[in-house]
Image 1: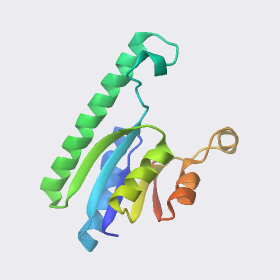
Image 2 (image 1 turned 180 degrees about the horizontal axis):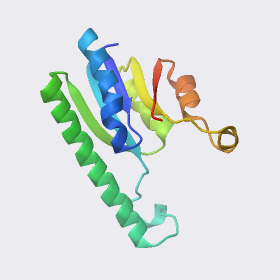
Image 3 (image 1 turned 60 degrees about the horizontal axis):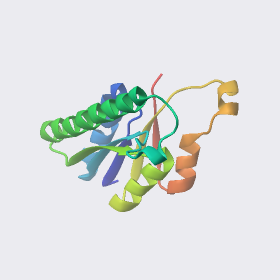
Image 4 (image 1 turned 90 degrees about the vertical axis):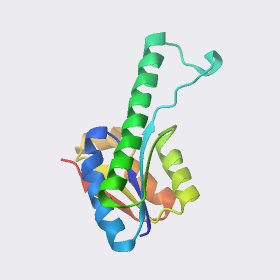
Length: 146
């Protein structure tokens, strides 16, 4: 497992998820990619959905903050642990975006957080972890988030 992708859904979970990647990377001499997939922010008026401008401004602000955090977090992790690390925000669909990063960087393992949901919730939502496993054909390490 020399190429490890950490998929962070919420910034507050970044440290927990990357701690597992650091352990594996130290054992294998690997590299870590830390990503968060954010909602795409259309830049032209024709591709926008109907809605007030402040929603787009807020999404842009949130995406910019997340991108800065991920880059700084990755840089600090690299300096602290001496492991090659990259951090980035990707805009788009979760499964498609992660698959693209996996293919471009020959990722061997994806680490992602997992929250326990009840049965009713599962009936009405898609199972992104199952979809990831089906799409990627590489191991997925799901870390319980509580």
